[in-house]
Length: 530
Ligand SMILES: NC(=O)C1=CN([C@@H]2O[C@H](COP(=O)(O)OP(=O)(O)OC[C@H]3O[C@@H](n4cnc5c(N)ncnc54)[C@H](O)[C@@H]3O)[C@@H](O)[C@H]2O)C=CC1
Ligand SMILES: O=C(O)C(=O)COP(=O)(O)O
Image (tube, helix red, strand yellow):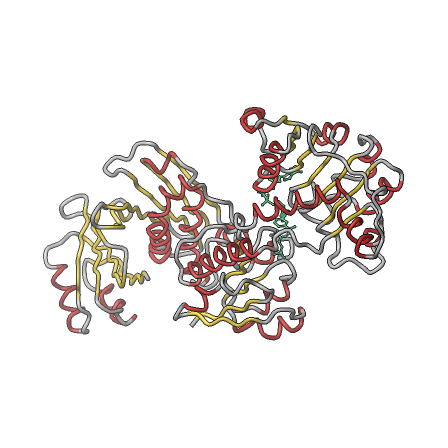
């Protein structure tokens, strides 16, 4: 039974699939302190959070069973990603579910600041009928600068066009062509600062975006600008902003997010007449909360059940077209890595992976992660290595990973070859997916074979002499080891050969040692693949 802890308020409807799953039990405990989480996290396999819970290295150290931290939302700045990666904990988010909601909140804030709605509301409910103090501005024909043209920024730009605004967009990934397609103008931070009437930020908070709008930008800013931040506190320097408003450079600002949340009681935004605030409500709609909780629950289930998943934050993303090609090979890759690792004696020094055929056309890095996981799992334990930390663990142990690609595969449409170089020897295994048969090992060292990579196998290297198969069979039979399938590979009659036996249950170590002692046998090894 997998145990899932929900430590922030997350939509009940959204996590229903976890609650309903027969192999999962869910505990909801919002509002725990770090110490309280450290005390209980040890029994959980998954942790579900929003932005309140700070998932620290301490919590992850205590989370001995923790496989995944699921963020029901976009920003993962409350999760120590490096600590997660080192510990092999997968961090996933739900990047799409709250895009529209946050975009709409941005507009709510932009219009509220343009028309002084919160200030006017307060006066009106306070009994004053003040129609003079709240002269606003239109959005129409104004220039809107959008910093960060990702999911939310792009939706903001789309809607701003409907308001008749001219849009300047800045994003390191925005090209002239894409900007033209969207009917906006590609700009620099400086262009936006000098020319926009409204500015809205939609980047993550990174060392690069931290205080990207600060005193230097306010000094050259177009007078009367209105600024919205529904992304992350700290992208705009709060202190410098207050000064810019007081100096009349900025006409008004609307902030949903703060450098420290919740802000201190004496935070200058809270009493400033020209700055309006909401308590990080960007994603807070019924729809968005359901969406993100559904998305994250679905992926958490996949991860717990060791099924393919998407939206991992501490792994490079896999584009859908690449995933389609690679996914069928993930299991094969991991098994090849594990097989060759069990075959090879000595300390692993280098993993050489060769991809040929169609596989050579795409970015195979995700598949290399699975192969590396397979290799390392044999030495470090299957529960210690996963696709998130496999490359990191290899690097930490100075295991070199070399990838070669050839576009032409000789006998198969696709072939994955894994060679392991150790302190003692170099061994190779190759596999493919055969239509109708699934994953197959088709080469061991230089011998062609056809073996299903599953269950208990015995790998024997021997001299190609009459009677050897019988002797092996008799010895195993007398020890109650039943042979389900057998493959022999040789290159020359009477030369060196290999034999791969699939046996119903694992043989005792002593039996394998006895097999290795038979005449004309060079070695015998048991290989167990799950
Ligand atoms: N207030 C709230 O409740 C919510 C806040 N957010 C926040 O909104 C932000 C944007 O979210 P999404 O659009 O979903 O993310 P996204 O990843 O789709 O977009 C972010 C964009 O920022 C760009 N970027 C990164 N560094 C940049 C730089 N130095 N200058 C300009 N652009 C840069 C990236 O290239 C990317 O296109 C995130 O910080 C997220 O955490 C998201 C949802 C709700
Ligand atoms: O998704 C995001 O990045 C958000 O900021 C939303 O945060 P929340 O889930 O409302 O605590």
